[in-house]
Length: 84
Ligand code: SF4
Ligand code: SF4
Image 1 (cartoon, protein in one colour):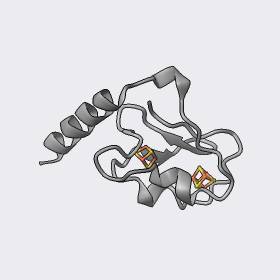
Image 2: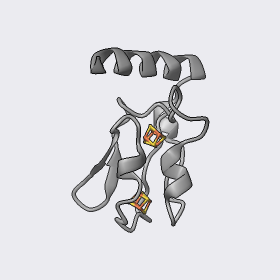
Image 3: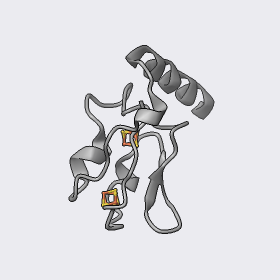
């Protein structure tokens, strides 16, 4: 399942550089997460790095993009293959 950034985002910029998949980007008003690139950090870290650093805790799971751990692992593998 991808994560998403809610309207509580204060544009503090700290989450974007910690994402190992470059899934976080500045949207028109607040930061956003590309669900095609977010793996919940599976493959890179044990816990979502963006959630750890966000000072206002505005990055919940996105129920609209439900994925199993196996699917997230497969996505990680696709993304790292593409990066080679
Ligand atoms: S959970 Fe990990 S991969 Fe997903 S947006 Fe946050 S830092 Fe990036
Ligand atoms: S860390 Fe949280 S508040 Fe800061 S830009 Fe990212 S989502 Fe927004």
